[in-house]
Image (cartoon, one colour):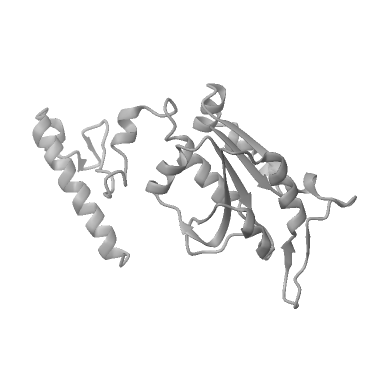
Length: 220
């Protein structure tokens, strides 16, 4: 898989791409991730990429031409172009699975007052990571990249992926490690029993309970 990220602030991705699972996935050759500065595609000598909104209003708007120029260069027949915007489809685990099957993803990080509306005519999908406003699309781009890359074959242990939250619509079960008792807090006896059927039953019951508790608590 290849992921291209278009942003006004490429250095924000330095730590993200050079640590932990992302770095290992790149080093193994399982994914190629490139970050591109939108200003490099500006037709202007001063690298301008934004301007005032027609009709007035606060803030600046990302211009068409730099984005169109970038996609002219980066896009191919395998590409899926994603605009990161509050009005997009909510990002969930099932969508992460779908995106992990693509050969090439391009992520457009917005900033300021957003994109010139005409840019939407050349994107394939709009995605939002939640009903809140950020200063730009860089954090959502990192979140989506992380969620997608870890699903690529060979990046994460297959058994770990199969037992994660949301794979079957449920949260993951609680997990514990040594010591068996810490400051009066004990590991459930069933997990110490060695009885695999009982452990599996307990874990499934806890998944259902935790999922229902979350729905009630947050009125989902």
